[in-house]
Image (cartoon, rainbow, N blue to C red; front, side, top):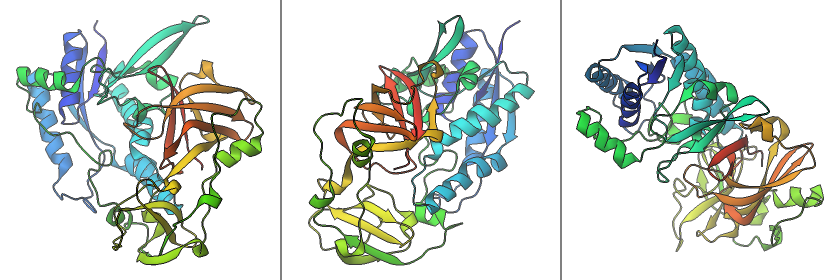
Length: 399
């Protein structure tokens, strides 16, 4: 009897070709479309995206002659992803809903629905790969980057665990995006030339302040320009060794603290919680030769601090800190112990080139100190660490 796999058909080309690959491999394939969001508040295009996606998903299933089902997970998505997003922004943090969506919805709630349909596995159109190895006679799953460097989505899956990986399949991880489109074209799939989705997972491209104002009130505050922060910066050449005092590690990972008196008030905003470190748009302040960038926010005092130009030192930081309870290991067999340090490659956002760094595990949590200062480190983001092309673990940046 063939193994059953439930494919999350999203109405896009990637999941469509994933279903075809699995069918070619001999799996008993079932298509399942999940409706996760239908509110158009803040959307830059007010079309009913999920209805269009559903139509394309149904056409693909019909073309491939596979069973097709529909499930409404919008309540779970709101509670476990969107509400988390609102809460994080309210605290002045920058969440990544796509990472959370994979952890909480695509490989959790969706998995439950797949089981109801008799599915042995769950498959998605992510550009990543999975391998298994034996460690002390125990099967361990490895999450690997997709072979297409322009589309690798392993970062978005950095919070998955071994149990979730057990039943997960990534059929197109060994393909490039152009190859996927060629396959879809040859098969005559309706999704072959359909544009990739953009913006927040299952929500779409949004005007963030408008979207957030569903729950977060607008509140006028000051924009303060910082022109000289030399006295604030902690500079360090190279990387500290494992014996480095925690005071040094904490200093290297500490964001610069600004005060109203540190600079000049140059404008107003509608809420510090609508802004994030490194943001360039939305200030509406003129009179500068170069663009202004957000270099700090204070949601309690409702102040946004900005600096002029991409070379402004306030945009860069040498390190970051992750609290102990926010550290997640995909490879639990490689979990670090308190007092240990290890070198990995790290990224703090999707498509950022991997950066050389040293991880220091201490009782309170983990310090990640980079070879080179990093731009736009923001609390609430996920840092993921890699060995070669394997995701070893990840964590939510505390500071």
